[in-house]
Image 1 (spheres, rainbow, N blue to C red):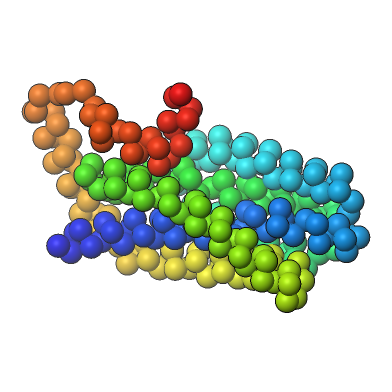
Image 2: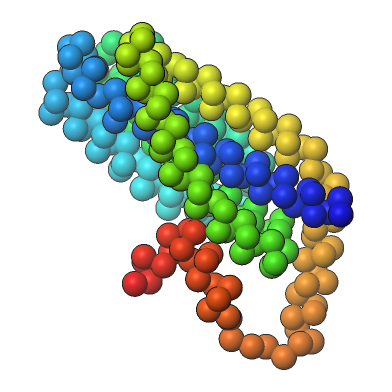
Amino acid sequence: MEFEKSAKKLTMLCWFSYMINYLARYGFSTSMSEMVADGIFDITFAGAVGTAFLAAYGTGQLVNGLIGDKIHPKFMIFIGLVGSAVMNILVGLSSNAVLIIILWCLNGYFCSMLWAPLVRCFSDFLLKKQQVKAGTSISASIPIGNILSYLIASFFLKTMSWRMVFIFSGVIVIAMSFVWLLGMSSLKDYLNAVKVEKVKEIQKDIVSVKAPVSGKRLMPLLIATGLVFTII
């Protein structure tokens, strides 16, 4: 029972970390028009800022996919969350267009540090029966994160300014980074125990008759991770 609770706790830590990270991603797109109106930059430069973020995010996904095999997910996700939080806060405090594009580019890289180690958490620290459930549930973090980021932006744009969108989002994300770090630290015994269970699981697979992967089990995970669209 305690083992199952720890597995669920790990899944929830991953879920909330990924969901909260969306606050760090969408601050610029939700605040862009207000920043242009404030004279921070023109609409053409604003487009360049968004492009820089996407380029850094895409490059980071490739790089961090390799780095993720060498660094423990506990630390990699923590660094990604803290880094993206700091970049958001600095953007909220900045009025220099060149500095903002640099900061937002760095934010794109930090945001890309979550997915690869998150998948590794599911692969290394969950048993097979738990992996499918976790893979399916993580899909819900994406739309919820999107909605939450736009609600927060809408509130602060109406009541205060675009700067508070970035600053508030940064504070929330940095708080989540420490929830993640402390939560993972509390799962130390579970992470050691699951290694033993994973070995037993592999040994069981070796002695059993190997069957094709069930489509019923595979499809939810493919849909949850977005891989189904790549395959199609």
